[in-house]
Structure formats: structure tokens, C-alpha cells
Image (cartoon, rainbow, N blue to C red; front, side):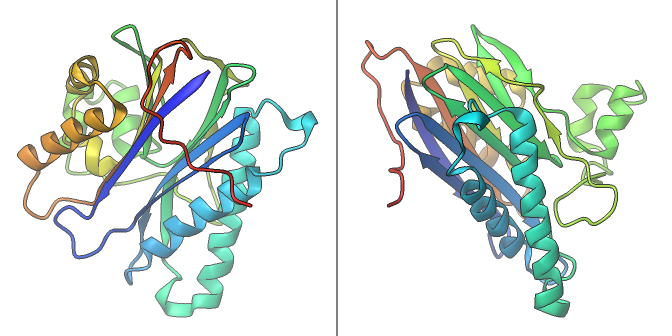
Length: 264
């Protein structure tokens, strides 16, 4: 199995970018994580960076018994990130005490052709296959609960005035909800994953994601098309937006590869 990947992050209409992204790869395993931070004193970037650093470090040296990575194992990694954020809230005092972060963590086992993921908050993961959405995470948010209860139409959720009210975020001591895939997910050639912060999916509907994917020659071209849609439709003071794209490729096909080397 080969992977083709790309990433983007932009501060949008804000004065600073509080999103963080990271990747790690070995001969067998590939991990990527996207975290969207928030903080009352501008410390969201600290929280999101803790998530990325902790999650990747946690998964770097899995034992044979822990392979392939499962959703449950990734939930544990994000739980450890939550603990590190809580510790930094105390150490940093007033500057960091309110910081939080949403996150999505994706793991791929290239030997077994499996994936797994976990998430917290409203940063999303999509898996597209054969022109359809094969998998999508469920937001931990008020509007998602309203959609589930049939109190709000799904197409109206993006711009609801309470859309930013979250029921779970990392940096929470009580009532934390981290959702993980049950077990692992079998990968197919040409599967495409998109991980994105709410600053992107708020302005890019799923139909556009699919259409742009069908026309893109590379993961980077796909992300460029999604970013152009944000710039064309977002308000002047719109949020940071970030995304990671991961394509599953047949090794016999020509593929544009962008994989970070495993650190020494």
C-alpha cells in the first residue's frame, strides 16, 4: 500500500492560528492528527500543539500486541493528551487555565491495510469511497444533538447561531467524551480521507468535497480547491482553517508521495 498525503493550515481572518497538525510515519505505520485550539487568553495554540505532540509520541512505539492500532487505542492517546493539557492549565496559570482543543487522530497500518480513528469535539474525519461518504465522525456539539433529535435539518446545522457550542473538548476534567472507531476499518484502493477543522467544513459542503476530489490529480490539488472555496464564501473575520488529506493508492500506479520520515 502507498499513501499520498497533503496538508494545509491558514489563520483565515483571525490574528493568530490556533490549529496544529502533525504526521509520523514508519515503514508499516502512518499517523496524522489535527487539533483546533481555543483559549480565553489566546492559548489555544498551546493546547492544540500539546494534542499533536502527545498523541504522536504516545503511538510511536506500539508493541506487537497493540497492532494494528484500533480506535480504542487512539482514544487512549487522546486521553493522555487531555491529561497533559490539564497539567499545563495548572502550570501556566491564568494564561492557560481556559485552553481547550478539539482533535481527530487517524492511524493507518500499511501491512494489514487497516485504519482507525478517534476524535473529540467538532474537528471532523471523512472517508470517501467510490464517490460517496463511506465514514464520517459525529460532532460533539449542540447542533449535532439537535440534528439527531430531528429538531434541526442537517443542511441548516452549519450556520446555526449555536453551532460553536461543544459538549466535549480536550482540556476538560469532567464529562469528557472521546469517540473512537470500534476496532479497525478495512481500506480499499482509492479511499480518500479528509480531516478538517470546523473553519473549513463550515464553508465547504460535502457535495463540494466530493466534486473537488473527483477533479483533483493530487491530494494537494484537492486541498487547494477546498481552501479556495473557503476564501470565496467565508466572512471577513472567519476562523482558522486546516486540513489533512490522505489517499490510499495502488502501488502499481504513479503516486505523488509526501510522507514525513520517522524521527531518529
